[in-house]
Image 1 (cartoon, helix red, strand yellow):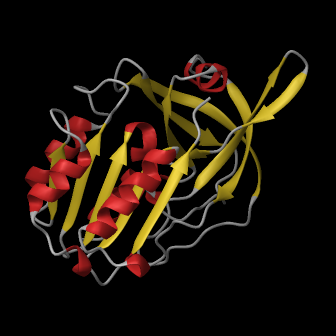
Image 2: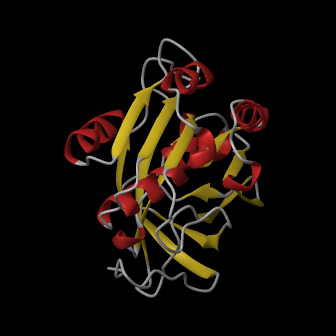
Length: 235
């Protein structure tokens, strides 16, 4: 298990990963926990791994953000939305099955405790890298305000890790959770009346939605140098 006070990432390398747990979070999204074959794997919250697949004699790969905290290494959890053959392949892996992957990758990370309040905005399985960061901040006893606004366009009334966030809000005074079920994340953030210039903001959503959310945050007074966004492609 990686120490909380010495956060580091291992060099990018090849690993073999075995499925040790798989559970549905919503009708389309699964959490899949993998154990890597070497104990020297470590990553920064927000990083990803690159599982490799083979289909019809051709090899493919797709990057997936790690949803678990680095403290669980060499285990990692992926949050996978079933939107195409690649995600279906991962979701259909049975307990005990193995696959090759490479990692860690990614720059939208935390390597030390931030000095400002945090606002996280996620849609769908874009919650994965944000969950890694939020869980790590919680483990570290982070005291600055941490807000999470979450939506799921695929199944609008069911949010991945919803019960996890509800429990965390009860036990962690710094954490505030808002569910964008009856309305879009933009409406939720507008209603919070936060001074966004004080916040570091992290957004993760599919395709153009990430850009749209970023532009909206800037229109509400967010600072460009304190705003980071990541988009993912579903297949």
